Length: 415
Image 1 (cartoon, helix red, strand yellow):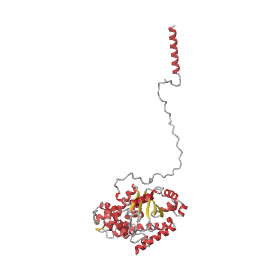
Image 2 (cartoon, helix red, strand yellow):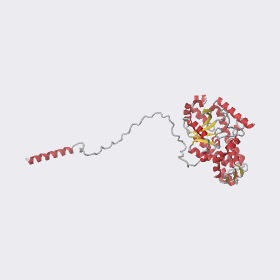
Image 3 (cartoon, rainbow, N blue to C red):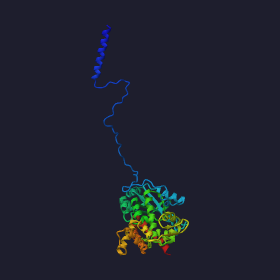
Image 4 (cartoon, rainbow, N blue to C red):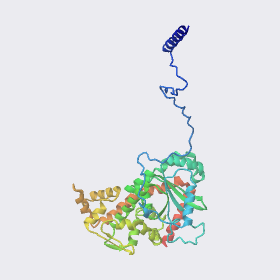
């Protein structure tokens, strides 16, 4: 009986094993925790549908790589101080623009004191505060700004739209101006240009319209590493050009006046009753400390320049070798003009050895006059175009108001 029972259990066990062997799925005990195999193609979550994104994209130039950072103290000479009240006012005005601005500065008699503008003047006689905004995409800026501040633009500009404004802005020196704009309790005039156009002028002096304005003291409100780097080159170029037109020894005010006068030399407004003839002297008289802060460290870093910080007299090496070192590092557009001048007049022909050519140029006694003439040639056409363009950008009413103010300044300087 016992043997029969054992035989039955053995037969049942064999039957169960056969069933498990031919089963289509493996059978695991409850104690096994082996996870199921992953799917062959992982399931990707559905992409959210895109919606209109009104905030501006990051300001990245499509033609130039951005400069990640500069040394902490690089360009410290550019950071000129102003009073706390002026700083707060300038920053508050710029913060009222919703359109993206990469670099912004304020300049002129509304920021730094000039001879002829008294502190006691009433509000109606105080000068406008001048701003310059450098942006990545001007059409994008004007589109947003025209929606936020339509009253800043003349009627025809609002009618034709931001594309018209940006295209017209590209003509001449590449700036669009909105003058006589009330903001923050004061009147302002602001220009809009591109970062690429600004940096090109700072490096090459293609028009000197922007670079010349930045030769003089200004207050940076929004900084940009690329602009700060090219502005340092611009300031050094201004020192080199001025030194080439000055003698062995001279007062520091002579250097400041030469630099400040670069952007006015050749400007048609200086010939017409449209600008104060004594403007350069008026700027330097009141802004001497700011000029020294801008240029002292750059000047003493050049070979052959002796200018102790506590002295007001500058001495320089005027040998042909020293002057040739300055000459060959001038901006490309100015060098081109100098070459063409000597080529036209056949005074000095170009040589295969460029060093020898610059050495001969540096020894020419007419070089200071040639440099002054060529800088005036660079300034003349863009300044004339911008003056005419001002009628379209400001509108007839504001253009007449602006012209009358300029004539008044000219009359004051002529007396």
